[in-house]
Length: 265
Image (cartoon, rainbow, N blue to C red):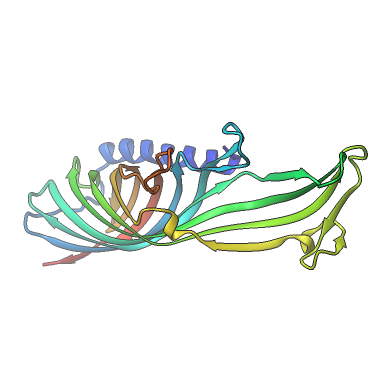
């Protein structure tokens, strides 16, 4: 797990704790609600996402692979809220989310034909998969105070895109002379190591996954002067890999959003 991801996860955990403590303790500028009240809440935010169980296999050896890790993404959309009671409401939303994942740098190689000491290799950096989802969350809201609320429900996710991206460089490695590494540019000519020898690749991998995801969003929100700060975790239930694959890939997403309530009467 990278330092950036660890900091983000700790920040979300601390934010949840602050929302709970501050929301239960403070009712200043409370938002009064009545049964039958409607609201529209546009919101934007960031997320940390990955597919649990996803990996890149580096060869026929079943123990040689690179696991996925959380990557920062973004999301935005709108919720419609209806109060069935002055403390209980329901929301239906539509959100676009870029839910990505990343992999640590890795390389693959094989012995050059006819040689005992030379190995041809490819080195991969900045490998990630960017998933574009249209999410439709349906949540129940319980307001413990006029400001603080617990939210949970079910979310339907529709995969719109999936792009596998990476930077790759190829070269030749001499086992007897480890310091003598030859890199090749896009035309196959020898080149010095540097950004100019890396090729940026993008592959459409949407058809490698199932396109429908069901998850359980659970979180908290705090509201002040119609501004709503929300933190949640979405627990993936659907197996997103295609049938025939041994690994079960399920979404795992932390998110923090900021929205504004427009009351409709």
